[in-house]
Picture 1: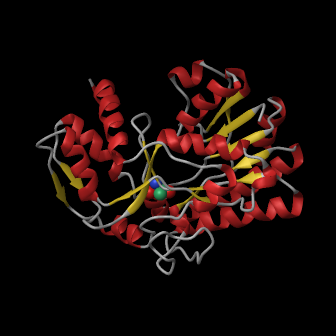
Picture 2: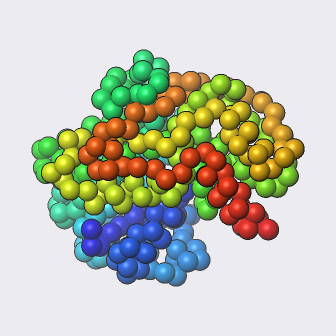
Length: 317
Ligand code: AKB
């Protein structure tokens, strides 16, 4: 990767991925692609180029790719699971029609493309524990439906046109930098904010609901490592299971209580979030990613908790 466009660069993953890519490839080599209403600010804006880049507008995307001579795109444009349930057609328009535009522009301009999938690409018929890399994918949420389609379309463009498409299935991502917007796994971020603010946490996900989660630094490493991987080693492409930790609400509570004694949580289960969570796996088998591109996470629940609390205390004063 020499010249990179991050689409959705002001979102939860994009804001940190853009800065990480700039630290590796140089500030001028990484374009921060954003949409109106989600303009970049601060260091994201000041440290390198930025351009309006809407995946639903192929001509706009093509112009940005040509202007900056882009050779790799990170396509992070998507509505997360809970928001998508309220706007299914928009979720499809951004996630699938938008990807089609990205892939066509990539084909015409010789770019590689990373488009994340998610644990949401699985459904209730999928084996829930140690979910295999290749298994049944019949998601119930519209977000999951768009993610399976994303995987299939990306593989199609690789096989038919040779476009270098690669992807991982992200678990819930936990970060102290940019909050997530409308996902089922957001509780695992929100709980840290409550702990640092000294507030009781109201948990919308029921006790005993296991989901895979990952600390953002590991997620960012996965993006870079997979895009830099030797293509000759890749048996899979779209999309790799990756995993770092799996827990249920009482376990993240206990991890925080070790460092914030007296921190309290109460359950008030949200029916929509719970039904989505119930349809997702408990934990993924990421052995294909480990074998094909040496994937290995650095953070577990305790080390992530220490880092989250330290950084959130500094951020929130
Ligand atoms: C969500 O909860 O919607 C996302 C995801 C797991 O893809 N964080």
